[in-house]
Image (cartoon, rainbow, N blue to C red):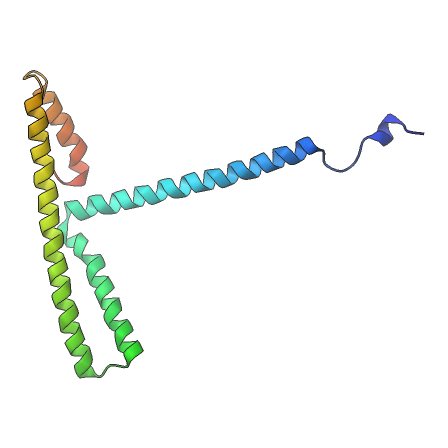
Length: 147
């Protein structure tokens, strides 16, 4: 005899499995969104710091070159003379990269200020002061306002 209590199965129903799957997918999606968002935040923060303070910008270059020198010394079993020679070459490369970065930063600042000026010229005179202040406030965290 089949009673109503006996008819219900102890295994999870299809509905429960779908809820569990939906929760799992939601959790994975949330993780991806948080990962992308935090990565974008970190990249933005690093770019802002690099544009604001030139001394900060050269640190990653110097760290990379130092690591490269240590790796080459270890892998190639360089003599002190060979290491000294490679060190000089990497230092020269680091100096050149620093100059390129400084020039690029100057060009970015000049372009930003030139863009503000060009946009101001397109606006009616009464809107220019407000636009200028908004643009400067927006660009200030990036260090490209000439302050």
